[in-house]
Length: 242
Image (cartoon, rainbow, N blue to C red; front, side, top):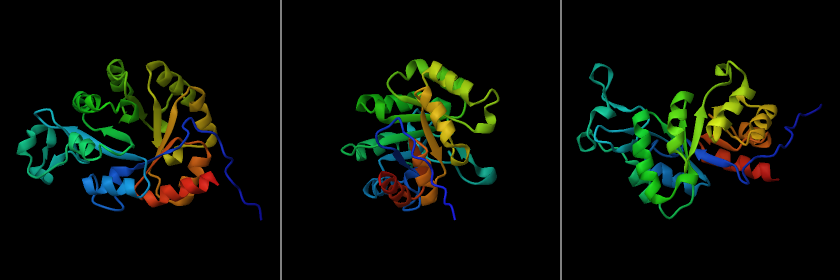
């Protein structure tokens, strides 16, 4: 019986980034300081989180962006930080807690108004080259691009959304100065990673929850993967190095 083995294709990065999704939520409560710290101990070299902004301009870490349930729901953007019903970590607190550790940070910018507060937190700490700000709207990224000279912008999209095709999409990202394309793991193949690499664009794959899948993605040249379980991604990286 013939067994298909994914051909090993080159990456743009020397080492792939293993982004612990929401801090590696398979191991600890999502988006908690405990989760982020544990993810790094388990072998992640990247952390992923969602960032919103409060009414008084504080960049905070949260997935849903609201408090309460159903008809009692209120958005984080409607609260001053000190008026939030319960503690929500700030981006500044996270970075200060992990100040002595080296890692890449992927930020899913949930509220476009959070972009400036994010920059205000990132820039004094000289972290820009290790920060990837992701957003699904290319027009919004184009607006941000002139002020993002020292950080990496990422277009989060889907293959089916690329009406003009991936090559034109890659060309447009390159023209705008966008650093990477982030798509669901099912959208990627070796040919597509090679195409984006021709434009010097990093390739990111999210929802990577199985070791065999992670291994195949790394072998097809994917530069970064996002998963809940850090041990799965770390083992896949070890397999990729063999």
